[in-house]
Length: 165
Image (cartoon, rainbow, N blue to C red; front, side, top):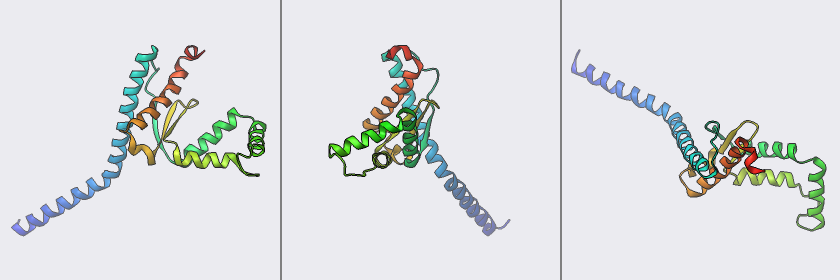
């Protein structure tokens, strides 16, 4: 094999390796973020267990989701927990107190607020902590740790329901 062929093969090998690494980079970034979330939640769960005494039944799954997923989830949870007539009564009361203009849709406003502000929510039915992907970059921040701890306490409450009576 001539020197030129060796150089060409070496260059193609480097290019192929770069393509493989570049293709895996997005997945690796998402995997690295997921690992950070899992690690943070495991650390926080250990601290919650130490403070409150009971153990979680296992790690609380953490799933990255979109802001729209969070808004839809919250609307669904509210519908399960709040009768429709209570929501309507709340809207009428807010109008009468002039807290909102007539015809203001509190549920739609709440959904928009959730999409833009919420970093994560715990789903007790699925025992899963949902984290908004667009805000997961703040995983190392103290504010995100407070949010994660708050949501994990909801998961803890599911383990030891007698503790909260």
